[in-house]
Length: 193
Image 1 (cartoon, rainbow, N blue to C red):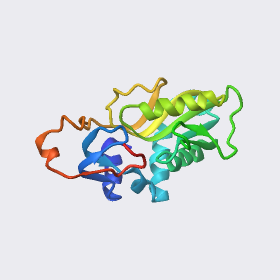
Image 2: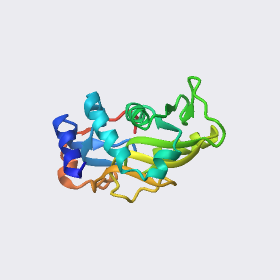
Image 3: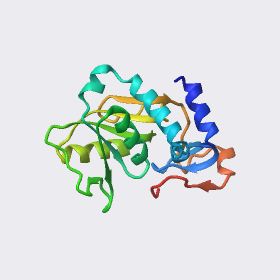
């Protein structure tokens, strides 16, 4: 899929939002990609994840034995990606503030894992998820996401394979452009800022 085709799927799902948004990182943005809306349609979720898997190098497709995603935003896309790859799907969650495997999920020591996110902005959540996967015994060999909002500048510590890369400016709360400062801020994500 081309970037325009992917964005057309987001628009069709009414998942490309404009306004004043507080991101999980605490940064602010005038655009927000609501992956939950684009993933609520199983056909669309499969289409996007299949396109993402097709962009992976063949060696990565062969080596990955599990996909682990951070809850909440990565659960659906992680599951769908694992389904397309034909491997196990698990997720990490933050019951006490730090990511950890729970619910009986276990990794074999050295198991080759792909960490899957919905959106990467700064890479902080990805790095935290990767650290928890490795603490649980997994070896994260790559990460993937539907949308890399950093346009390739986020460093997650392993190769990152996004379906699309976007350059969407973000701002510190005390450095907003006037047009953004004039709009009420909303927090559409799953994590408190």
